[in-house]
Each structure stands twice: as structure tokens, then as C-alpha cells.
Amino acid sequence: MGSSNAGRLLVFLTASLMLVGVAVVSAPAAVAETITPTLDNPEPGSTWALSNSVTFTYGMYSPQSGTGRLLITPLDSCAADGPTLMNVSVGVSVSYFMYANNLNSGASFDQYVLEGPTTLRENCQYSFTLSYQNTNLDPASFATNTPITIDSGTATPTLDAPASSSSLQDPNISIAFTLPDSPLTDSIQLTFTPVDSACGGSASIVDVNGTDVRALTLDRTNLANSADVRQVTGPTALQSGCRYDLTVSYQDFRSSPRSSATNTNIQIGVAPETVTPSPTPAATPALRIGESKKLKALLKGAGKPISKRMRITKFVNTTPAQCRAQRRTFLVTGVAAGTCSGVVVERPKNGRGKVKRVKLSFLVG
Image (cartoon, rainbow, N blue to C red):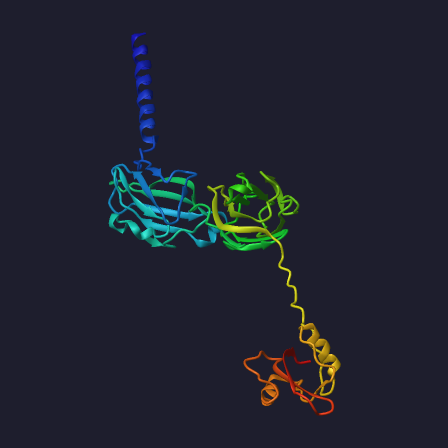
């Protein structure tokens, strides 16, 4: 009985050893790994201005020198630009400035482009993937932050018309502007701010429809009376004869802070100029020698009556130059073109009696 139990125990121990041996032989060997790095900045979903620096910070664990890499991959519509592979410093805690418009700007920190574009593009999104190997050169480990948006904010618009200190005829106001960035829907605004206190203190804010309008015409008596206008806040009419500062503003399609441009001292509601032609003066009827009746009427109007017995014996009725040629008859001095000024000589019809000289200025007909 005892020998029987001993036999069974021996068989059990042998089987147990065999199981242990199988377990030891079949267990996979442990694989060493590079600990995942930390990519602290730029953070996922953050925005990076193209010309401003960003603090690039990360951490590695027992890193092997020369194994630090940063892969910057453009996303969506910018994917055709291709990725950028960079060499980066290794370290337990690394922090330095990095510029989107010059990725080689951190060369003093062993940061430089190995392959691909050396600058990122405005209004594009990217993924940043940091990798390294540990001192055992175990397989590399990665950390990815995405998306990172390159956006310098809403670019400054230009108010092309009306110009500062211009005067606008009544009642229409023609406005034109340029927006460098694609605008956020319904973010375009035109603001009329009165300059003169007598013209009121409240500004009129005109919200422009949609995103496509770059020029429109407004009626100063009703700013809302346009298909391009969504709504008006404040006075809906501008006062004729008043000066206003006009501001155009908008937000870019990423909802960045509003940017604006202003033209000042714009005179609103100046009536159109009416040009009245100068009346053409009536010419004195052409006078010839012997026509004393017309001359009598002319002299009578000037308060210089002529004798009934007198008649015109010499008369020049053409140009001042011809007047001057008749100095014995007309004493002409500095007359304007088209006029004669001098003395009309009259003699009695019978040729007897005193000669009468009458001073006369007239327009040659």
C-alpha cells in the first residue's frame, strides 16, 4: 500500500515538473520598449500664427542621441504640399522656439529639416508626430498631436471707396472693399460713425449678407434698402450734409478676431452740382454810317442824346483792331475783345455847323 502511494506521488511530481518545463519553454521572451514621449506643445486643436514663434516642448526617457525626429504632415486641402521630416534634439525635457515660416530657425538646438518643405502654409492644418529611440535602440516610440492650425488671424481689409475726405452726391453711397481672407458667413460689417456732434452720436452698423459681397450701393435715406444688406443696427438713415467715418470689418472663416479699416471725414449727402451756363450777352445791333436812329437809341439809353441835325459820318462796327486803326475817329485804349470804345464824329447834314463828338462804348455786333 505504501509503495503504491509512493509510486503515485512520484508520477505526480514527474508530471508537475514536466508541466513546469513546458510552461517555461513555451512562454514568450519579454520585449524591451522605448517609453512613449510627451509632446506638450503645440497642443491638439491649437492655432499657430505663421510669423510668430511657438514654444515647442516635449519629453523623452533615456533617449539615444541622434534619434529624435518630428514628422509634420499637412492635412485635407493642403496635403499635396507633402510632409516635412525634421531632426530634433533629444532630452528628458526640451523647450525652444519654433517658427512656422522657418522650420530651420532652431538649428542651434539641432533642429533642422531633413526632407520636405521648410515652411508651413497659412490657413492649413497639420499633424505633429514626435519619435525617438532609447539608449538600447529599442523600436521607436511616437506621440502625435493633431490638428495644429496655421492661422495668423483675420488679415486687415482695405476700404477702396469712398476715400477719406471725399464728398458723396445725394442720395446714393457707392462702397467697395477688399478682404484678403475668406470671411466668416455674415461677418462683414460697415459702420458709419458721425464726426460732427450736430449729426448725432450713434453709429449706423450695416451687416452685409453672406460672404461674396465686395461692392454695394446704399441709399443714405434708408440703409436697409438693399438686397446686399442683412440688417441695420442704429439709425437707418444718414443726415445730409454731415461727415462720417466709414469702417469695414470682418472675421476670417476660422472665426478669428475681427479686423477692420477706416476712411475718415466722408461728406454724406452733398447735392449734385448744377452747372448753369453763363448767358451770352446780346450784341449791339450792327451800325453802319448814316444809321442815326439806332445810334440815337443807344445814346439815349446812356443819357447822351444826339442832335436831330447830326448824322454819323464815320463809324467802325467790326473789331477792336479796326477800331484802333481809326484813331482819328475812335480814341481806343485797352478795350476787351469784341468792344469798341471811343468818339463818334457827327456832322450836320448840310455840312455846316459845329462838329459834335460823342464818347461811346459798345459791343461790336
